[in-house]
Every structure is written in C-alpha cells, then in structure tokens.
Length: 277
Image (cartoon, rainbow, N blue to C red; front, side, top):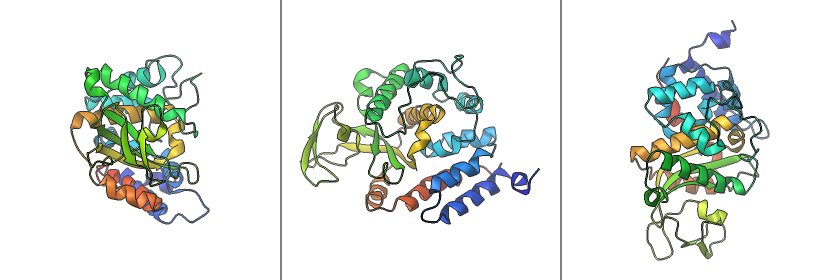
C-alpha cells in the first residue's frame, strides 16, 4: 500500500485542497486536481451522509464514490433517492441493467450535460421539475423552483456556477438588466437567459432567492452519476427551506473573473463539514 493511500480520508482531503491552491496557470484546473485526488479516495458512509447534508457543493466529492455507496447513503439520510433521480433525468430506474452500478453511466443515454449544449439547461430543469413532482409537490409550487447556472466561464475555463433558486415569478416572464450587456431584457422560459439567477427585476421586485449554490468543473456533469446526484441534492435543498444570500457576493466575484477562489471556497465548505473518517 502506498504512503498516499495510508493517509486517512480527512488528511487526504486537506492535501488535495492544498494542491488546488497551488494549481499553476496553464496546468490542470482546480477541480481537475481535486477530482484526480478523490478518484482514489474511498469516502466512509458517514462522510457521504455528512456530504449530502451540505447540498450541491458535495457534487465534486462524488467523483470517487460508487453509485451503490451514494444511493445507500441517500437512503440512510432519508433523502431523495437515486432511483427517483435516474427516472427523472434518464427515464430508467437506478437498478436497470443499462445502469453501471459502479460508475453510474447509463448505456445508450444521450450525451447532453457538460458538453456545451444549450438545450442541457432546459432538459435539466424538466428533469428537476419531474423529480419535485415525484416527491409529491404540487405543480403550482414546483414551478417556482429552478436550477440556474452562470455560464460565463463554461466555455473559456470549463467552470460553472450553479444555483438552486426559488423564483418568485414562477414560469412567468420577467424583465431585468442583463448581466453581460447591461440592457433591460425580458426573459421567458424558452430562453437560456431565463435560467440565470437574478436578484431583482427592473422595478425592484425580488426575482430569485438562492437556496443553495456551488462552483464546479463544468465537465463533471458529463457523468450521469453526478447529474443524478445534482437532481437529488437540489431536491433535498428545496426540502430544507434554507437560503444562501452569500451567493450574490460570490457571483459578483465570479463575474469579475475570480473563479478559482470561489471554487476553492465551495469545495472547502464541504470539506470543513466532513468528519475525519
């Protein structure tokens, strides 16, 4: 057994976060470093349950966990199951023969997420709505919850800022000052801009309350397991009733180009909440 593998999970997480902070320009991105570090790390059931409680910021930590372990932890936490999540996102139960029980990949599934396809955000929200309805939420209530994303650096840096929001206008159009143009714009559900988070409309009315957020490597969403966990964790966030007003200053920094520090803070929030073993 190597020296690295003899380290406890907590110590290894610290080491990975140190490596992230030392990532050099032109080298691997912060979460690439993180993902490689966690790929060989076996999280204990207690650590997975604790991570689930941290919401969608736990997504990068799921890279090295098997589908079976994640689903078992969700069941233990009495959370939304991966079975419900896979049915909503991929139209298959989690124990279907097409689902690899280690990697979580669905054989024959359309490669959509994490691949710079504009329709991905629409499909993600369709699946999210289906999952909320499957939990017994009335349609009139479910339409107020949105999976939002800031794609400013998705193409240039491969990074995305995700948010689960409570949208006061529901599925109605709203008029806001667009973030990248500064022009007052009306957004509708058939436009990608509608799926970005906004504080207030042009008349000063609240548009979104952020329930949870995370900054992650965009291509992590190429993994079906990660997408399913995103749906499950986002649904758990909705059930929690929490709010994350700290998203708005983090988003300002993100838009200003401070993506790596914001990603580090998102990762560290989970790391600090995990038990040592």
